[in-house]
Length: 503
Image 1 (tube, rainbow, N blue to C red):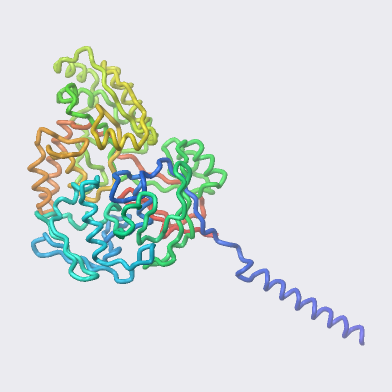
Image 2: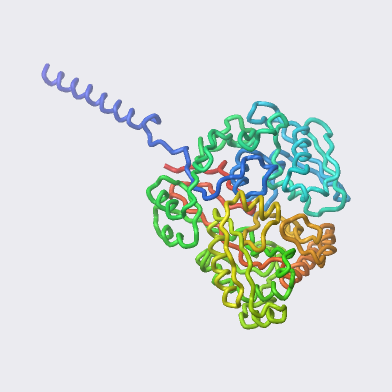
């Protein structure tokens, strides 16, 4: 009997230990840990992290996570509150008043107020800002109280609200403004933890963020200019997300370990022509060059077919897009005739500056050079660093031809306003055919009439060709299967706030 009782006691004790052990194994401390540190590859170094002192998309993809704007935009193009909780537009459409959140702090711990918004927009409008021209129509900025600010325009701008959603309209603190290029101070969901130029950049979750905290603790952006190296890093799991080139899609599609998200960019790729050049000032020469370019071959070579042909400076995603592809059709024989009429029967030499960091534009430029050679135009390609492209081509307008993209505008006027004859942009239509049309479009309240105006402008550009319009490429990202919440936006930036991992 004693032995039976002893046996029962031993069994009870062992059962208790077994239950305790099972419970311990299933406690949260021992559960599978969900990853919170994301690593993404990128191909182009940011041109500093000061949102008011650059035109580089490579900067805005990062700074959108560090700074905030008054309003934001969703992947479906909807304008939503951000630093401003609401807004009111006057009856005449020439005043917009924003009511700001009162719970926003900069990364340095100071409360954000309307005076910071005033400072930021005055800085955005000053002579050192590449985007100053876009905000010339804002003629007054009034701080009504600590959390109310009013903007007044000189003329009616029916798309005014959208101008406050771009990442270059970020709100910054005056006391940190001189060092934002390397030491950004914003109000965003992430802070800058580390930046080693030409290597990587690390964002840290801002636990004092006014909104819902980011689900990720860190985001590490690793600079990998070579596409093959990027794919190798992704396939071995070193990268959680990577931008895809067209030739890489087949390497990840259909593999259950990966996801692919793809959308047409809100962007255009163009071959810009400097019409101050004696040869390129001739309209027949520009038309001949356009006729010699097979756009589908360009798309196939640069994007492996993942692009849409365009005939003007609006992407097919735009609600105002007009298909002008048939105005100047591919016709090399007619191109030779036009060159002869223009006085260049034997062709000519021309330079093409290509940003070497953007393989899409390099590949497109090389195909175009080969196509133009078949009508006697000898293209001398020069590959240059992105920073040099920005300063020499975009800034100083020291170029003959170039291939580049223009991205992320929410309204058609912003895309097309560079074609004013007096534009200080690196590309313009100096003959002035669209000046009056652009003025009308900016003030036309009727959406259908505005669409007709933009159609006229697109037809003029397709004929006059201050640039040769090539394609709207597709944005493509490859993600590991456990990455969720990553989306593609109509403005060219990344937003990591809602990104997370599943187990």
